[in-house]
Length: 288
Length: 288
Image (cartoon, rainbow over all chains, first blue to last red; front, side, top):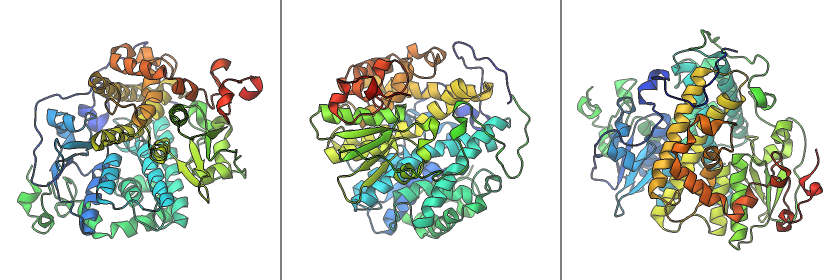
């Protein structure tokens, strides 16, 4: 119980609000400056950053390549802290100004695909991969994919924000979102007690969507000491599933793409060719 | 700036937290008591409540029927305030314990479909309706459907909670989520300046997903005085689109199904036959 604020009848902005990402938050949408997006040589052009939502798509693209599909792509870096997502080219690709956004240049005019979940479905259907063919298993994969899209805003925008990023620690908000994050982890933990992967026996886009958020938070990769705070050790089935997926070579490559933080050995700022992972030198990583 | 709370190293529950819906929030998942779900005579069995997420699906089912598809269904009431979603039958249909959940009894064993977005895609694919056939328009519908799933937790779980439901008014949280709700409304308003519907010329499941949340908040149907607080009059394109969809007979029927609040003339607690809308008497509404 922290406040006795009385809201006005009509809200108005009072300067910046929101901690670490405050400068990129506004109550309006649309382009803020003119800037075209770069276009490389492959049909699939990705504009992204290695947040969990970005990692979903680079994991999928690397899994497709690993499985022999012709899913070559260019991955361009969008620095959301610098406001790249408000350039006119990016807004044309995604009017919501969030990463990831993808353009498919195999059709004319190029087709835009935005929202990480939509990109995963698009790629799964385009290549016929990572969505089960069996109708019941396919439905289950779609159930869990949509579950991730509707649930993670409570983990990221809610728990992550109030626990790690907000400029003040608000007990009510931390309690609200911690309880929900733990409930969601328990949903997964119970499901993964009886299932190897989210849709059953087959690894699918549902796993690729859920792993970067819930897998990584249990493994201690997100939000500082959050794994301790959430008592993540009790979610043993989630951890078992995390570890199996983390060992996949495509996942190990996918999480590096468009990554600009952490150890230099974990970073590949832009990806334009499969050989970029092998020849990853300082100039491929880029310089700040 | 409202608090100087220091979180513990490991979180623990301190009694109930969360205002109006506090009693149904827990940090664990799973069934809390044994109760089978009822099953009616139609292949599609819906277990829901007329919140915006519930209304998406009843609008879709009524639109399918209006268009001549054989989408007859039974809609059973799940009173989330009473905890119906924690019964063993409901948890088997949706391990996330949220409405809506659907069982398709046209296959053996019956197939579960949960998450409103997944149900919309499932019905669109099963009946070949309300997802455009053109690949670019279909992709655009999926983009916006996933946009709704990832965005509305900020409108409902964020703005709606802190503005209308939380037991205290926390200025920081209200400002955070109001700014995001307004940004999202501006995204829609700009898109609908150039598009009759979300995916272009064709009304689709993207409209059915977005309308119950963003259409109804602009029209003053959600969260008390929220339309005034959000200055909803500036989103004229959203209002135009809301009004066109609100006039559709299937929408007018869909929003009544599983509705237990508001005027008695707006309520149909359960729906088992198309004639229920015409013969809607007090016993069809139900009694508390």
